[in-house]
Image (cartoon, rainbow, N blue to C red; front, top):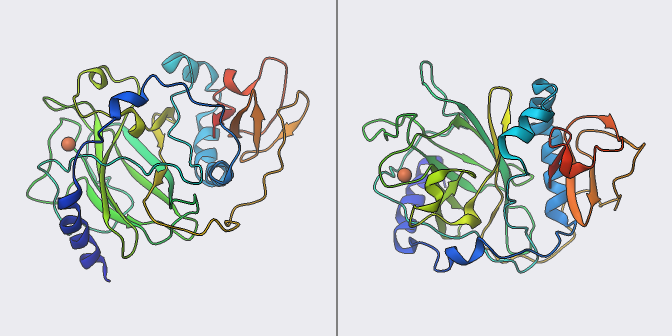
Length: 297
Ligand SMILES: [Fe+2]
C-alpha cells in the first residue's frame, strides 16, 4: 500500500466506526490502582531518552516553572496492561481530508502559534509496539480555523521500528463549541482505522465539551518556550504476548545519593518515573516533587 492509498484507507474505513466512547464520563474520577512498571514504561523511558531529554536539558532549570503551571503532574494516559482497553474512538468531525502529505512536522514559514510536539507509541492489545502504523493528524490553526482548501496543519506519518511517532506542530486554537483538541486517524497495516481526538489538560472547556473524554488527555508540559505532549495509543490489534523489544526492567527504587541518567527509570511510591535530566538524587528531589528531573512514565 503506498502512502496515498494508506491515507485514503484512513478516510474510508473510519467512516463506519465513528462515535464518542460510551462511557467517557466515567473515567474522570475513578482512582487508578498503583501503576506498575510494565513494558510500556520501559519503552517510554527509551523514548524519553531520545526525544524528551534534549528538550528538557535545553529548558535548563525548569523546576519552578513546571510546578507553577500545573501544581501537580498532569494526569497520565491509560497504562497499557495486557488485555487493556483500546484507545477510545471519537467522532471524525467535518474537517477531515484524505491525501494529506507525509510529514512529521506541520510547521510552515510564517505559521503563527505556540510550538507543540506530541510523541508516544502505538501498541496492540498485548502492549507490544506496532510498526508501520499510519497516523493522519489534522487540527485547527492558532485562530481555531481549519484549512479546507489546502493541507495546512494536516499530515500523516508512520510509526517506526519501535512503534513510536513524533509530531511537531502548533497548539491548536479554540473554535466555538469545542475544547482544545487534535484529530487523528490511526491505522495498523491491514486493520480498521481508529478515529479519535487528543485533549489538553487544564483546559476550562474540557468541563463543558460534551464529547471530551479524559481517557484521551495527553500528558503536557512546558518545554523550551513551547509545549511538549505525550500520548500512547492502544489499538484493537491481537498480538501474542511475546517478550517485546524493550530493555529488561531493572526494578530500581528511587534512592537518595544515586546518580541517574536521562532515560533511567525508577519507582517511587508504587509509581514509575523516567529521568529527564542527569543528576544525583538529593533529599527533597523525590520524583513527584521535581517534574524537571522526573516525568511520570
Ligand atoms: Fe476539530
